[in-house]
Amino acid sequence: MTSTTPHPVPTRTLGATGPQVAALGLGCMGMSALYGDADRAESIATIHAALDAGITLLDTGDFYGMGHNELLINEALRTAPDALREKALTSVKFGALRDPDGGWSGYDGRPAAVKNFAAYSLQRLGTDHIDVYRIARVDPGVPVEETVGAIAELVQAGHVRHIGMSEVGAETLRRAASVAPISDLQIEYSLISRGIEDEILPTARELGIGITAYGVLSRGLISGHFSGDRKLAANDFRGMSPRFQGENLRHNLDLVEQLRKIAEQKGASVAQIAIAWVLAQGEDVVPLVGARRRDRLTEALGALGVSLDAADLAAIERAVPADAAAGARYPEAQMAHLDSEKH
Ligand SMILES: NC(=O)c1ccc[n+]([C@@H]2O[C@H](COP(=O)([O-])OP(=O)(O)OC[C@H]3O[C@@H](n4cnc5c(N)ncnc54)[C@H](OP(=O)(O)O)[C@@H]3O)[C@@H](O)[C@H]2O)c1
Image (cartoon, rainbow, N blue to C red; front, top):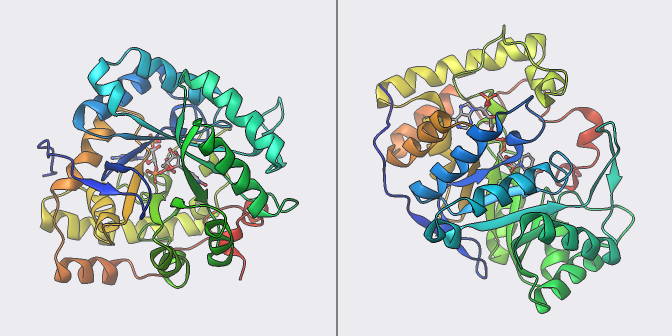
């Protein structure tokens, strides 16, 4: 049995200076890119259902399908009832450079580029402001202070409300926060990606910066729905992710089966336990769920009805110990862009 009863969505505040948001955010990436093809009508219906259920934060990137994801959100907001549209908050990442074949060619954090990216995003989203704006990966050729300074100027001008960061380590977070208030750090955090706990999470807490956690289901790997015989499309990130390959995948799916035993005892699904575990890590953590269908969204929302006490959390962490996953969370070339992984 899984938890499917609608639960009121509580709110959390992103950092000391950020907006109040529903405790679960909707990550829209998979509706346009990286996990194979998605159904447009179902994607829009999923965004509407999320807003209707009380979710407020919609996360996107201008490079998710090269503008496709922002245009999709635009359409979903245009066709949503006024009361729902008014509650929606946009969190937009920029900076990744693409090529016409879908390749990735680095990051651009120069101030003029930041403003150029923002101008296009505002147009595609059809809004006059972006609620949280962040560079997806720091540009190694531009001091982070300059990139953040450019977003701060966009805040001054009213085009952006809050400044976020993405996948940066503690030192870069401090440098960014010395320029302007940072609402939240968006970073991978799940039962099998716990790298932030040593240094990054304590630093964010010290600086009053919230966490928007992505990959809480490790891109579906620990959702309880993934299987070893699933055929992935050529453009699916998981086809290249070390955690989804061969022996690593078999090992990781064994961990999921350990988690399933706990889920069954709690009357919840595996995905709900994985999301509830992230929710339980602190009031300053907001999981972004990557649902792209209404049934997945309903399941994710059910996590809000799963309460985990200290004994439950300990049992979960025994089933899936902190370093239990096999394989890195990104392919090697992409790991090199992660400031958060530089030690
Ligand atoms: N800042 C960054 O560097 C960064 C990086 C990646 C993502 N993000 C953001 O974070 C968001 C979430 O990341 P993610 O999509 O990788 O996270 P995720 O929630 O770990 O994985 C989403 C995938 O899990 C599967 N899934 C199975 N059951 C689900 C359920 N009940 N609810 C939701 N998904 C379920 C779905 O795959 P199937 O549909 O194939 O079953 C879905 O595509 C993204 O949409 C994006 O906005 C940020």
